[in-house]
Image 1 (cartoon, one colour):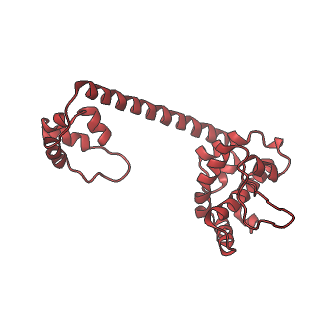
Image 2 (cartoon, rainbow, N blue to C red):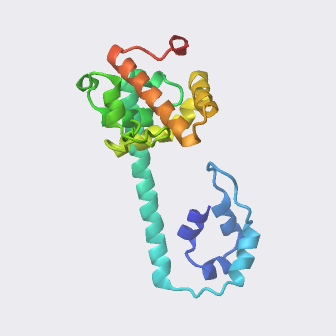
Image 3 (cartoon, rainbow, N blue to C red):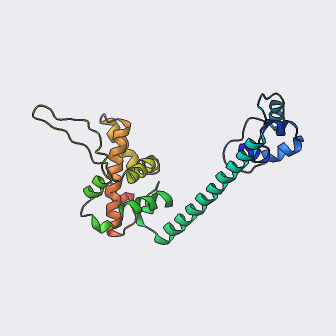
Length: 218
């Protein structure tokens, strides 16, 4: 609605001097998300008392910026559609894991590359930069450590973005997460354990071309 108002008017003066029916048309948008609390009538009243000074140059600039944003959104939507089409055609077994979408699945596959380049799951865990950072000296051994954060930051970011949906959509991961919490692990640490479990499963599915079966994890 706000984008539509900016594209149509561009200034408070235009809104104040416009017929209320024209403003109402800008509010008539069948989009997702919550409706805005402001009504067309309230907007018009606010515009009448606005202290903003109308500028023709700024109105033109605002409308051009809105057009650029709309163009970028169209390009993103088109790219997302092509990614989904590719993912459906590729039909990777990791898409059978609840919580992994076509977009996130394709991102993971693109970063991992050919799974035959890895000999064991620990190698892709290391590549993702989510391996535990072990610290030990002659006098001290760390019990709670962070992750290495070496490797692909894009893969690591994707994994941490999807791990909560994976946990919420899969009882096996939910139980594993709650187990780590009960062992005194923090939320982020427990997530890291789930991410490594997910990568081990991904390695197995890609190596064997099997679909995800939660029964086999019990």
